[in-house]
Length: 258
Ligand code: 1HS
Image (cartoon, rainbow, N blue to C red; front, side, top):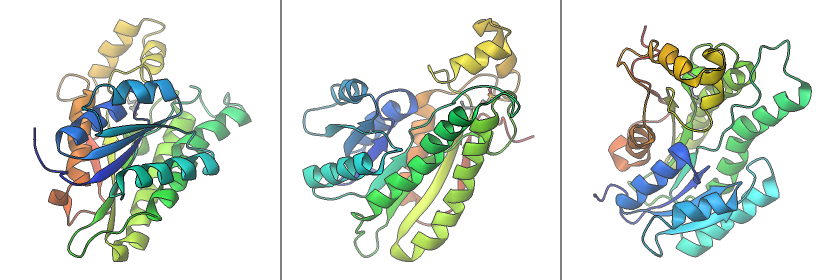
């Protein structure tokens, strides 16, 4: 398809499904070798099976466990000989509900996956980033419109994605001098297994009604697709975005424009 990531090595967390899988497929189509990390090893393997032999590697790790993350990232760098791009895509909605009803363990788990996971994966990847003079390495954090505006019933998810937005800006400051760019994509709703429970709750248990109510929030008149989010991730990861760092890019059909 193209050569926008020719010769580059990327690692995509949560690469076994949804936006993560679409990102892997797009990166490979643009010439990258990609390590596909997922807490569900079989899902990572399914993604790898969709691309030509040798261009992707399946890795199993829980992004909240430092030893697992370090081992997986080291294995990716060893297999492909370098690491240039990290996409922090692994995430969870966690449990839906207002702050009154989320219990402590559920709050902690969502924050751990969505926020601590970004730190652990970034820390591990940074040990391997070594951009050539005139080039950059890149981290793309997949945040959410929920990091920009409040979403009903999504208290801990909003808190976690707001933290990812803040952390993206903070990391850009520390890592800029090392030629490591850090940006975030804030997707609007994409119909995936992760988003369906919220849409069903919104529709009073009726998923189709929930989708219709949600589409009303999108000026473009529809929900997004994984490929549309992957295209934004690709841009930020590529050298076309060489002067972008600390940027928060809404890929949301205008949902947060008003
Ligand atoms: C799941 C994704 O991060 C978006 S959060 C929900 C936004 S919407 O339901 O108001 O479109």
